[in-house]
Image 1: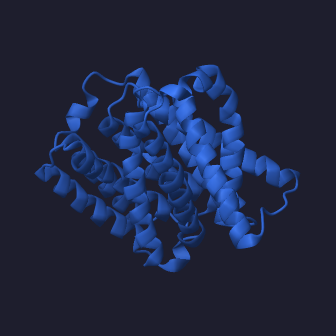
Image 2 (image 1 turned 90 degrees about the vertical axis):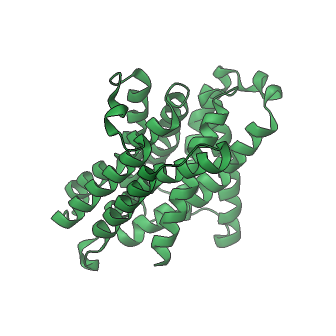
Image 3 (image 1 turned 30 degrees about the vertical axis):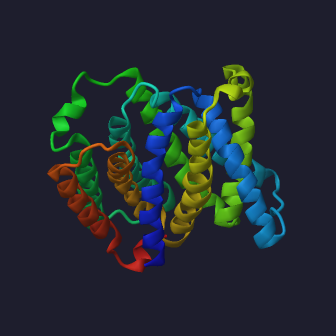
Length: 295
């Protein structure tokens, strides 16, 4: 139950990242926002590792290749796509695209890691995705297709693929690294990859123009959205598997809508509550399988 509680809280924290990302898109470049987010997270994670374990574990060549791939997918690519996409795509529409994550994670986890794909789990995932879609579209899913796919939508889909790869690579890396170590290394390597792009974007010259809102959003993204959110998500992947953890991502758009209601005074609707009910039902079905069914 502790694992599931952390996954729900992670979804709430990640729901807030859509609001923070939209606020940052006004006055801060995509690569600058991503770099500052993970620079903040890297400093926090290194401090945590020294407090808990006295430092980071040594890596061999294979280990360095793995953590560089983690940094390239879950930090560099995902955030480049995420912040770039949010410059043109509304947060709600981006959230419904992100909600396709669990389907891809489940299918690929079954193909590459042997995680059992049962009919019950498949139905649960479909229900939770449907619930997220209903919540985001305010009961009119067809409205999300209005105008077809834009370039911004495709960019957000790039973020989906990046996160799926990060989740699956993380499962493999945690066969010899703790969740904290894997996240710390991925934050450091991803931050290094983001730096030249942030500098080219003009981060240094733009820094004096950043407002307190920008800095608070970076702190939120770095500490809550990354240090805490990534840690809890990776702990869950290690304990209950990638597919059963991934289905909780469908709570993220619901949380994003709630954050919009609390922070931006956006109205709620009955469709949100119907969507939440479907998400909860779907998550329960996807996770109510025998322990041996997960890897």
